[in-house]
Amino acid sequence: MIKRTLCFTTPAYLSLKDGQMVVRLPEIEKSDMPESLKRDSIRTIPVEDIGVVVLDNRQITITHGLLEALLENNCAVVTCDARGMPVGLMLPLCGNTVQSERFRLQTDATLPLKKQLWQQTVRAKIANQAAVLRLLTNADTGCMARWIDDVRSGDADNLEGRAAAYYWKMLFAAIPGLESFTRGRDGMPPNNLLNYGYAILRAVVARALVSSGMLPTFGIHHHNRYNAYCLADDIMEPYRPYVDRLVYDIVREDGIDGLELTRQHKARLLAIPTLDVCISGKRSPLMVGVTQTTASLYRCFSGESRRIAYPEID
Image 1 (cartoon, rainbow, N blue to C red):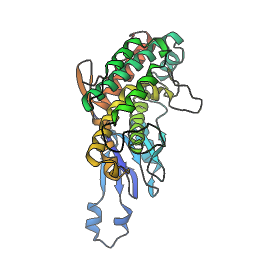
Image 2 (cartoon, one colour; image 1 turned 45 degrees about the vertical axis):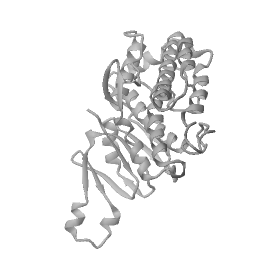
Image 3 (cartoon, helix red, strand yellow; image 1 turned 120 degrees about the vertical axis):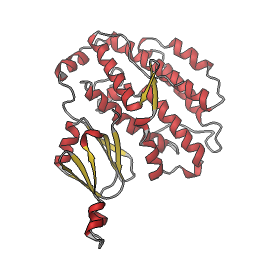
Image 4 (spheres, rainbow, N blue to C red; image 1 turned 180 degrees about the horizontal axis):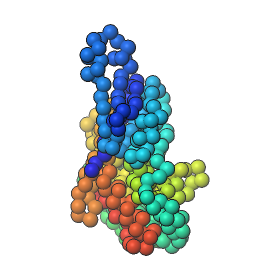
């Protein structure tokens, strides 16, 4: 079942009662409205139906009991800074009944295996980037097709980087004002939209890794000592083009003068877990697809399989 993604951008009181998240709005609680209307403003959501919670206001109060219930149900809790950008991610410590065994298999993975898995990951990412360019632009993707075939174990030639440079050069090239767009966390819009979308995707992937009994920290390629989610950053790579396509649609509709990260933009980006993906010919919501991907990754660590089940953009 697809889990719900909830985002709170205004002051709120969040608590737990009878397995339900209870949402109260202080501006209504403190108003002179009739008590009957105040009661009607209270909303409840079953905790078991929630997959991701985004806390995007400094005046949100959340109880420890609700946090405990969310984490026990393998929910990812994302906190945002004053600019509305995600800065923190809270995940459960225990997401699988045989977690220690799976941790061991993950940490004991050989370097050749990890290089082979990264090779698959890079090929899947470049293939999806090429598909996005074919769908949205007139760019020639013949070079990307060659790069897919040329990716070696561990991507020793850094074809991921070469493909990314070409991809970002071409993706927004036909949009007036974005001809010289450069991808960078602190760069010009729509980098802000991409950053927000990737943060939501990262939370979904990290949640799925924990559910599959793996440590998001220990990657197959990323290994920054200060990064607590190296494996999530590895596995999300082939899914990034889904975010890129959504951001492209926003840019085409709103133009470059309307690319501040508004509540409306966030609402569209929060739909990322529900985007349609195709894995092995079968379609499902992205959140479900990510779970299939992380389950297949575990099977690679355990020796049951040699391939990660990544989505394909068609």
